[in-house]
Image 1 (cartoon, rainbow, N blue to C red):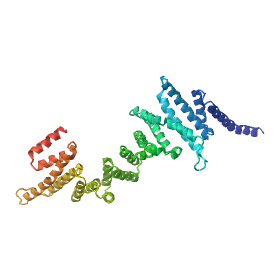
Image 2 (cartoon, rainbow, N blue to C red):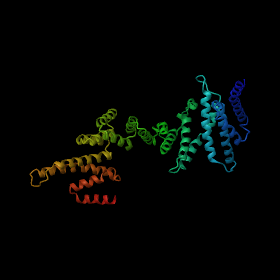
Image 3 (cartoon, rainbow, N blue to C red):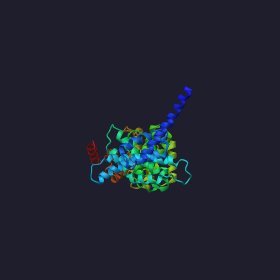
Length: 411
């Protein structure tokens, strides 16, 4: 009997503890509007970790309302021009949003299709009234982060990702919040940027895709995605991201350079050509796709084929300086290759013929390098070394001296 009695007592302990926690929840709810916020927070801290009450939507509703009270108190001080705590406002908005998301998820369980729980509308209004502070908080902690200390960056990420999570949540699905949010993709970018800086590649892959189509930041978001796949060693996903990046953001050298480097390092030029042909099949007159195919042939040292596609690229876009520069470079490379075979003995009757042929490569390169300079005079990488070499081999002394001076000034 004693043993059974002892067991009976033990079995009642969890039940009584649970009852006590439910009483704490009732107490917190009853004093939401009038109770001291600090005391309310102590009650909330108990019920959100209790195994029983943490499964109840009412718990998270009360927890969120306490955070709302905290924010309102600071806003009242601001209205009365008294000192107030901005960070409390930001963090209360963050915690309230998280708590209401949990509340909605729990309350929606078991609901019939098309029906919404009793908390949703009130919680939506509270979140929307304070959603801007999620953005403000994220910006604040990001701007106050320092190198070597990731704590503020992690906090910044918490704000930004909560903003995103809310916007795409089932809680706001029927309100078309995602479609109405004009800065959503930008916030997603900053979430992925913060995640990149702290090496949180899982969150990079979670949030950067939302920013892929942003007009100004999409290309950088895709770079983050590629780097995350590379970090995880997922070569297939990395290559696919690079390919999409080349097609989507052709002006961004990151995707093209890494893709070509991969194909070259792994001697997979046939795959690279298939990729280029696939892009050209979609858009045969796309100057950048033509340039890519030219560059692939260039890398394979199939110089004549490279010239064909570089020149087609120029036909498609007469102002594409990079294509002019590469035509000049290919002619110079052909000159270099031919010089290895050319007769060097001036007494040999073939010598003048070979020299004339060698000179012809530089003559062909000349107008292309000069056009590259005309189109992009400030981008000396496109023409300075090339014109220096061409002017030297064509004995164009005055112009060669100009290039010498420019090279010296460039260091």
